[in-house]
Amino acid sequence: MGIKEYFEAPLIAVICILLIFGCQEAKNGSSASAAPPPSRAPRVMNVDGFVAKGERLESVIGATGSLVANESVQITPERAGKLEEILFRESSYVRKGTILARMDDDELQAQLNKLRLQEQMALREETRGKQLLDIQGISEENYDRLVDELEQVRADIQLAEVQIAKTDIRAPFTGLLGLRVVSIGAYVSPSTPIVDLQQTNPIKLEFDVPERYMRDLEIGQSVIFSVVGFAEPFEAKIYATATEISSTTRSFKVLARCQNPNGVLKPGNFAKVDVTTGVNENAVLIPTDAVIPVIDGQQVFLVKDGKSVSAMVNTGERLGSMIEIIEGVMPGDTIIISGLLSLSEAMPVNISTIVDFDPEIH
Image (cartoon, rainbow, N blue to C red; front, side):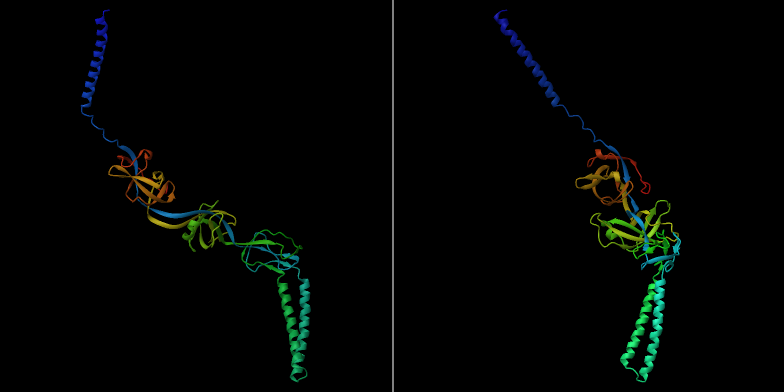
């Protein structure tokens, strides 16, 4: 190849490359100057909604408790001695003052007879002294001594009668007897139990309530409780509350009384307690799933003018799958209850279904 051909070949290649780049730039230029494609309409999201409305809502405190005898005592003798008679039947109903058992009182009766003889002697001495005093046969001081001796004997008689009365062991109140734990002839002392006595009509209900509800309970307030084995609930009335809060459980004790004329409720029964502290006739209830936890609290999404709008809310009582909204939602507002993870502020939405919940069912 000659020198001319040697230099012409590279030149031709360079010219071809420049032509190619030039055509490409012209093409790009014509594309840039072309009109932009039309923008797409924003996507509308289909969601389910719930229309908030006013509902009747009772504020109820739930607790657990136990039934306790209204009065309970372990019957014991007041003095030591031999148990001579047992006059009660186990698991029987007795009235206040009923004699349950008797102790041996032979020694006390003998002492009482002796004191009565001494009383007769002292009375004769006092009578004779009075006659002598009237004729100034003895001094006033001597007569006063005779009167004091008579009064001393009479005081001893009264003491002996009280001791004899204590040998009769009586029921201190009307109630139901338990099982006896001693037998006739046993030597008993004031620390020896004989039988338990419980008053179960009325019967007490004891339960603990968290400290935040302390101001919601009042004396005379009704309490509804249920006991295993009974289909119908029972009603009691609060009659006392503890004056201090437990430092371990952060709760306080509440006492209520329930009438139990047939004795169907027994001390020791477990009770599930509901205390109604108030009624809101126009409470706003929405599905619990519609409430979204956020950094600043809780929020829901409302539908306004076809778009999603977030609203911060304060919640109250729960009722199944429903929750009370104290602030942030008004009756008539439509709350979004589906697709919450895909929602954002001011997103176009379409309510495809209005869902209705019955708070009594859910």
